[in-house]
Amino acid sequence: MFRKKHSAHDNQEDGTMRQEAKINELRVAIGPLSGRSIQYCTDACLRRYLEARNWDADKSKKMLEETLKWRSTYKPEEIRWDEIASEGETGKVYRANFHDREGRTVLVMKPAKQNTASHDNQLRHLVYLLENAILNLPEGQEQMLWLIDFTGWSLSNSVPTKTARETANILQNHYPERLTAAFLYNPPRIFEAFWKIVKYFLDPKTFQKVKFVYPKKEESMELFRRYFDVEILPVEFGGKSKVQYDHEEFSKLMLKDDIKSASIWGLIEKPAQVDNATNGHSTSEVAPEPSGIAAQAS
Image (cartoon, rainbow, N blue to C red):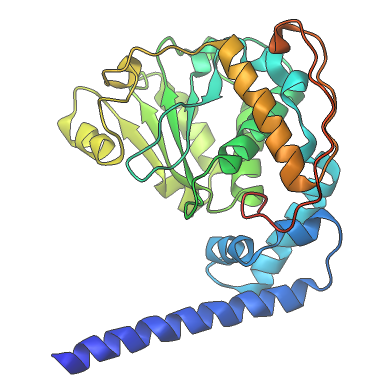
């Protein structure tokens, strides 16, 4: 009996050592880094890329290099709320004020509340919220959850195929292993036609994280309740909370997070534009002290 326990412990240690060796191998392979790439490429970050590519160092290197190139041009850490606040006016995507049972960040999506037509701005809004979700992950957590409410959804207000494809590309290729699960709550039957197209954009790992939840099917609701306490879930997801999205309050929260993000990345915060996002007032410029490598940044 004791020998078996000892063997299991040894196997766990061997597995950890092999993973650390792979992380070191990947770090050597990507070579010297500069600027924000140094801050981004923590050991935890490299581990996620290795996990996404089944611990194949060559494939992970290619994936990570593509992300570093994307981040150097797209600059997701520089997107500020005042630039994309109009995208969030209806609450079509927002960071929830509750967490799952493990304390992970939750993004709520309500595709029927689409309020704009700009493909680029919609993606910038989503990327901003992905970065914000990561920024607000508690210590020890690296993943978020998505809750997607299909109330009022139809093919006429669904996102274009181009946007759906690019969303999947960004999530899978530039935020690997950041998603625990995406719960599609009560999608209408007509969604099946849209899903038949979208599912081909997903890699097998992401596909397995998509969970369909139907309030009249106890099996899917039981799975849902394993992740969430119904006491804190909004009523539209079968919970008891009646809290509604408040764009003005959410904007205040995002402006505070922008300052925190600027501090983490060592940026000089840009003054916010005077608009509804700041309730008619501009924010003051913030010059944060240089910060070291932060877990949130990766």
